[in-house]
Length: 180
Image 1 (cartoon, rainbow, N blue to C red):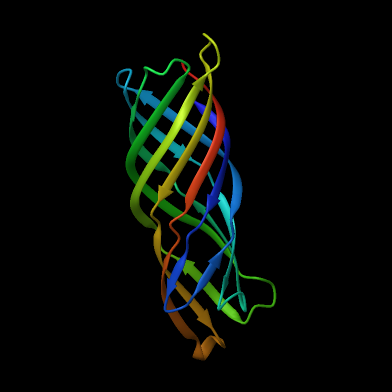
Image 2 (image 1 turned 30 degrees about the vertical axis):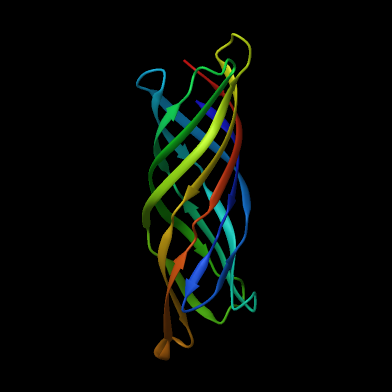
């Protein structure tokens, strides 16, 4: 089990609208199961809330909160003493839990569809002496793609804009872990 902090740094694109999604640092939890000394499966969990704008910041789309659990299958090298570097690949599911438009917004609603995508990672566990404790440094690339529906205008004559938004964050993590 590893607890720490992760930087969720989106590499966002939108079509047909341009979007900007804020970088966020959030608490994170990783649970890892070892099949043997070299192969393990890991679950990354965290919740992040991002500020979202469009049209180079001219349109405030409010905040969106998402839960992106990511499962990876990892291979680690154990012949470097206290250092155990690893690489991994897996899948991500992202649920968008809450979207809040700014107060006084001309927009009526904004909705994000869930996403399934791939993930890759690299990192190192640094053993702290002979104890079961370790320091963890990790980076993941996660592919998150969502369809976004934005409604604007009066209730009887609302305009609807649908956009494909790729969030595709780089997730940097640092934490402390313990093997059981």
